[in-house]
Image (cartoon, rainbow, N blue to C red; front, side, top):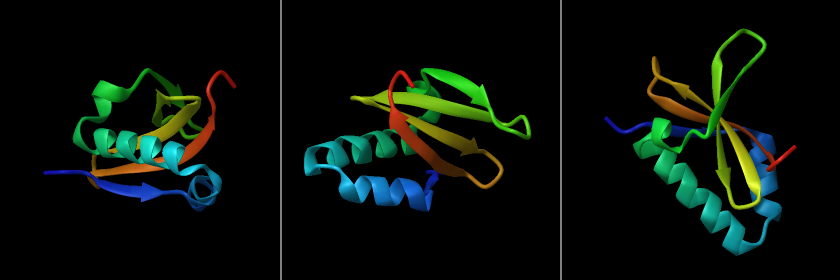
Length: 84
């Protein structure tokens, strides 16, 4: 079963402001995460309640996401410049 993608509203706003090339690159990574999230996780962080938050590097961005196994969803939580 394929994952469902959910995107935080702040991420949505950021995507709208990016050049088309970068939007396409990030969308491609989102699609890759839907197919195999563990494959694209470069490292993990813990959120305030102890959940494992995956981070994938895509171009100049670090994408924070939650692989919600129970609901079979990938939740894009944030995008920041890589290295910050």
